[in-house]
Image (cartoon, rainbow, N blue to C red; front, side, top):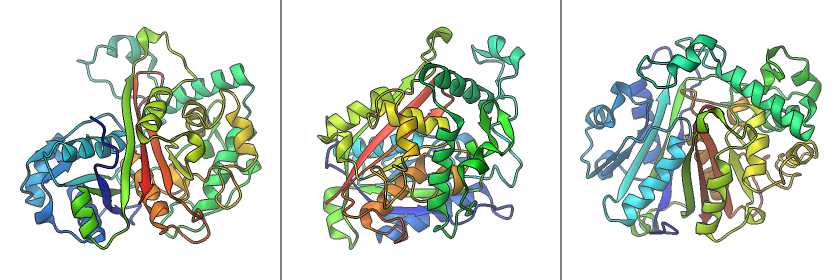
Length: 389
């Protein structure tokens, strides 16, 4: 069953805080939910579908449903890491198309910054029940270390350079300077990036995303309800998500799940990469942007380095304006999960609500895509195509 044009995003809200030691995670979820509902012109009593992931307090959507006093006919707690919320838009559209709910709420929230969670540089916590634990635990793998090795392989195979990766951070900072809520607003140069400390060779500190508290929420609804509200009509055109396992460590280290989700989402939407006016692409590390640009079909394999150094990611001058809020590299990475902010900025662009300095002209088709969990150790990926009606 296709979901093309069967559901609309009518509410989108990014929590303005980046440091919230005085708030609970449940409070951040609730404030984000209320912000998205206000944006849509709806109320909590209108919500009959709720979607959230592993960041939810208590580990189950039921806790937040109780906290928000929701009256639900549909509940979804799919947990596939940072891309969960991109996949939730697909799931919400499917539930709406099947008549299971009419107004779906998706929330994310977390407090890694105020609680001192150094996700990328601390050894991964592996529970004793996980089947990979006996093999991975002795080596104390870190997320940044894994992505450092992936970067080395991409450099070896395709001649990718540190300067090319740095161009991605430069583009992100160029956009972040216009975002009053961005954690890092300073515009940086390629030299700034490659002169920042090495975290996991060849990745520098400025190749890595920020750590922030905060949250966000989305409202997805039926075409009938969407058209009754005084909001721009942003339709779900196509979507896909997948799980890309490590195949017992026989992996293709320079490929992401986007190699599957991109073509599937484009096919359902009936568009091609050339039709995309704006792209939100998950940027936990600069190398992930490079690989996804290739796997989504915006560049041939090994050519994304040249593409980004030509300034093609910068709004107003480039061929593919990207992460115009500053992305995870400069703006926000709430709960160490960047999927929902990718959808939020895509909605802003389609509504023509982005900052005037970065707003894409005639933006009618946008993409949001990203991975979840850890590339190279089995990961998820989701791609979403949205359009302005």
